[in-house]
Image 1 (cartoon, rainbow, N blue to C red):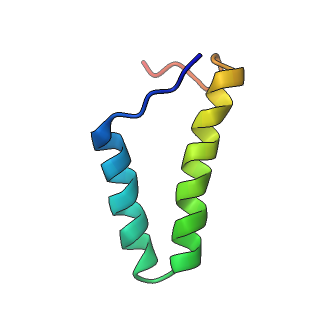
Image 2 (cartoon, rainbow, N blue to C red):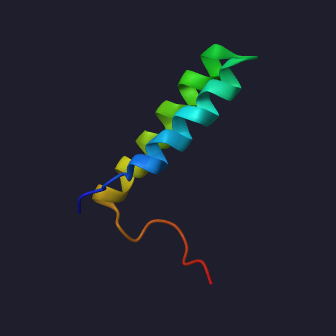
Length: 53
């Protein structure tokens, strides 16, 4: 399985990380890293998570 990020999704992650970084730069970097690491798990486990009604 390949994960494809839309340009808008990447832009939103960057915007949120920049906002978090205003108060806590280290937390913002870790948060953004966690977002991308979490989605990478889908490559190995495509059924991970729940179905949203």
